[in-house]
Length: 94
Image (tube, rainbow, N blue to C red; front, top):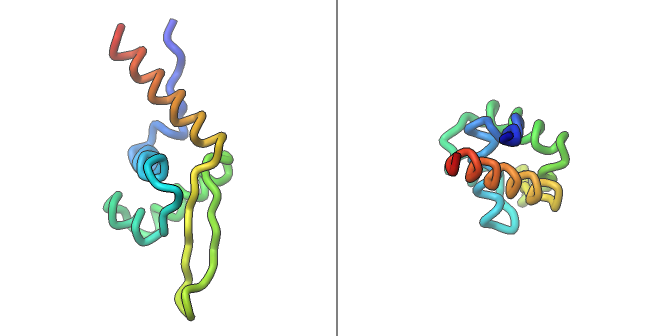
């Protein structure tokens, strides 16, 4: 029997964010917004969901007077992403 895919990661935008964060130590909100081609509002909502699940951390600071939001993947997030990818592989093999 195949394992179920993590519904939190099965969203295209959240999966895109996690994929980007897996290959970078951290990423700024603007970078994630540009790379995922999402709106600021939608990205913000999806980042909150990933943060609430403990998959990412969100750090808010300032670069001069400009707000700066930086996201990092957590150990829990790495594990969840790797399990998601492995489950996808299992589906492909069947």
